[in-house]
Structure formats: C-alpha cells, structure tokens
Amino acid sequence: MLPKILIVLVLVVIIASLGSALFYLVKDGDRRSPRTVRALTVRIGLSIALFLALLLGYALGLLRPHGLRPSTPAQTAANPH
Image (cartoon, rainbow, N blue to C red; front, side, top):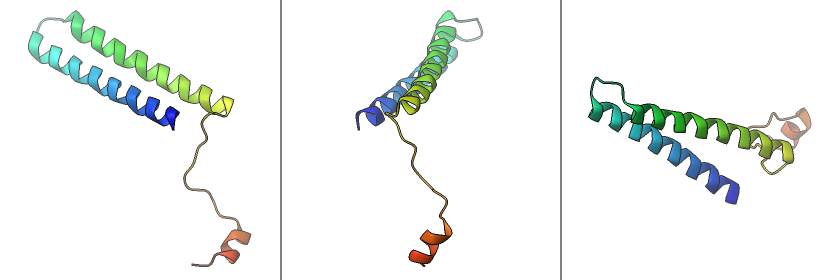
C-alpha cells in the first residue's frame, strides 16, 4: 500500500509543479521567466525519477502489474459466463 501512496503523492507534486509553471508564465507576462523554466525542470525531473522508480520497483519485485489477463481455454471452460 505504501508504494501506491508514494506514487500518488509524486504525481500530485508533478501536477502542482505544472500548475506553478502556468502561474509564473501568466504572471510574468511576455518576458522570459526563470521561475517558469525552473518549475518545468522540476516537473521533468520528477517525472523521470518516478518512471525510473517504477521500473526499478518492478525489476526488484516490489511492484507487480495487474489488470486484464488473457484467459486460457481451460479457464474459459471452467468459468462460462
């Protein structure tokens, strides 16, 4: 459960960073803003870190994918709908 919470928290921080970049872009106007660039750089860094953490967690067996699994003919015969 803890990995799921951490993933969601990092996603919230990524969205907050994107929102702050939008705020600085609108507030600073037409001139180039280092605050906008910094916020977008943080977002990209967090996104890459999250992606690498997901790959590492999967490789170490800490995270397991779930979802749709293809059914085999034996499973279909045992559980007809």
